[in-house]
Image 1 (cartoon, rainbow, N blue to C red):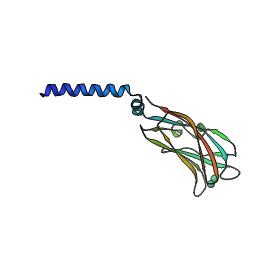
Image 2: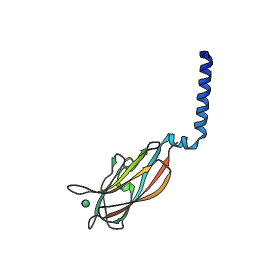
Image 3: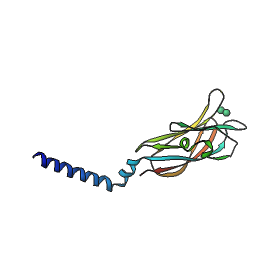
Image 4: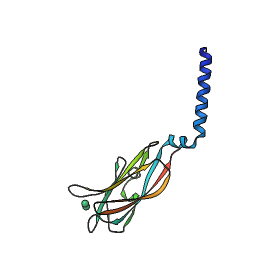
Length: 143
Ligand SMILES: [Ca+2]
Ligand SMILES: [Ca+2]
């Protein structure tokens, strides 16, 4: 095989690979990754009385602290900036969301859950240290 022909074959192979990837919806969706946005936090059972001081850790971002009374629901936007409550999830990756109760000395970690790169609008229960929280979130697949 001469070089010119080899180049033509390689080019053809590359073209086929590109078309194959283009027709596979799953691969295209994976390629862009996902955006996770926390939307709402609800206190079903407090860790302390009369209020909890709660912050979230979304990926590598920590939000501000907000107080909760039992049964209270807060929009995630109340916790801080858009950057603090959204996080990029790499293709095939996951992002950890933690619910933490703020204390003067050592904070109380109520629990955490892992969010995969898969389109969803759902909620997860986070229970621990005598407390019970419900976190709602949306995962959007990026183009
Ligand atoms: Ca506290
Ligand atoms: Ca505590």
